[in-house]
Image (cartoon, rainbow, N blue to C red; front, top):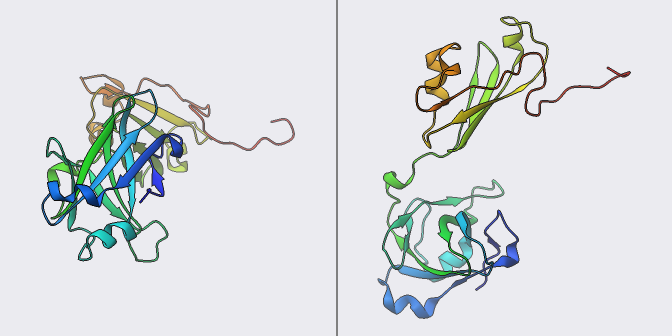
Length: 215
C-alpha cells in the first residue's frame, strides 16, 4: 500500500514506499516489511518516512504505540522511530522513522514488536525559555539560535527582538551548557563553537519589528 506521507524535505512523489507482506517470510512472525525507494539522483540524509498507523495495525493487529521499533532489514541496525498523533485527537496516525538513501537507492526495513531502545532516542533538537532574560533559544544538532526577550532590555541597551546565531562544532546539545558558562564565556570557542554574532540593537539574523510612518 503506498504511504500517504514520505520524505517530507523533498517532493513527495520522489519516493516510493510500500508495505510488503510478501517479504514477511524473510522476517520474524512479529515483523512487517517496508520497502522504500529514492527515485531521485541525489543522496538524501536522515530522511523521515511515515507509515500510516492504519497500515501498521492492518498488518500487525496487536501493534501499540511505544511497543514498536524499526530496523534496517539488511544490517539489523535499529533506526530512530516514533509513533505520532498528527491531529491531537489521542489516536496514533503514523509511525515515523529515519534513514539515509544514496541516489536511486532502494532500502528494506522491518517494523517489529518491542520498545525502541533508549540509545536510539538521542535528542537532536532542543528549545529553552529563560525567565530572567525572557529569551527563547533553540537548536538542531548543527546550529543554534536565540531570540532576545524583553528581560534582556533591562540588562542591556536593547529595544528589539534580534535573533542571535550560535555556531556549533559539535552535534550535541549545547544551549544549557553555554547558558551555564555565562555571557562572557560562550563568546569564546573552547572546542564546541561559540556566539560570534554581534546582534546589538539590530534585528540580527531575521528578527521582526513594526515599520510605521517610515521608522
